[in-house]
Length: 374
Ligand code: NDP
Ligand code: GDR
Image (tube, rainbow, N blue to C red):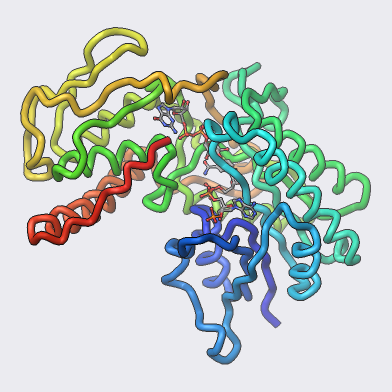
């Protein structure tokens, strides 16, 4: 009999890679998707299986982390061997705008799921993975951050995730559940949500290169992050549930870059050289030179980026750098892709999309480019 996994957040970046990974491993994968007014399964359409086919290996259930009756019903129906709680309002800046909702989903949602597992008597059967985050470190107490570094969350998102971290530990200690936290540092991919900084940059500059947008507005480009590739990180989520004992692990590359460096890499992939003007946060980035074919719409001297304080956060996490020694030693995990390689892949995919869009535009089929920002 194949193992059954239940993924909350299956329509998100990590959920989609994890579902692919588990299907390849022969799992029956169940995912919870929210009801939305527009289709939200774009990241998993390529692995979608028509429910009318005999014995589909991927099954989707409507649900929401704010609805405990629905979580209980789905868990009862699926009786999973492994539960991956990836669902969340995952945008840090948005959590300042919607703190109560963020707490409901990111903190109480975890409790609802754990309680439903316990209520159904599945606590000895279902192994539980909680998507914890490097945002827990917030105002960092130690560099680099390990499993033992104290937490100091700096946003409603991080505070909600702190609750989830501890309630996961608590259910492990109180009820002997196999429940663990992956403290994951930032991880990205071509499937990254468009309003997170890396994707905002690769998509925005690719659009500008093709004449679909004029200028990108950014926040704190001096923030430092430890960026890995989502594909490497979901492998680790699974590995964490295959141990004898449930434990918490930091997952990170151990290398740190600034948002500014990520901008420069992206520009280089597009054949652009940027000149940053001004100091600190009041900078304009001015395109100084143009080489290659990838940015036909940009002329030397064009201002392609400006700083807009609306993207500063009320409390910022300036620097994060992880130490994943424990994961490397105990689980033999190693990231396979560097941040620079990941950036190149993201630019390639966003440029492909921008070129398609520009081509349609040339032929009079002008679809508006979504300028939703974050
Ligand atoms: P995404 O934002 O891409 O995906 C979040 C998923 O959660 C989506 O499927 C979303 O559904 C779903 N979701 C949102 N609200 C609810 C709700 N109320 N009920 C049920 N599902 C909901 O995030 P990532 O894939 O990047 O991250 C996965 C998890 O890992 C998140 O919990 C995030 O906080 C955490 N994390 C992420 C890191 C990263 O760098 N990516 C690092 C550390 C932790 P919909 O598609 O409908 O919006
Ligand atoms: P983060 O990711 O907050 O670390 O949370 P994000 O990509 O949003 O920001 C990273 C850093 O870039 C700075 N920044 C900007 N960010 C956004 N979104 N938009 C901008 O215009 C911009 N300009 C500068 C930010 O201030 C920040 O310092 C992500 C999410 O995936 C969380 O769910 C996850 O828990 C953590 O990573 C680890």
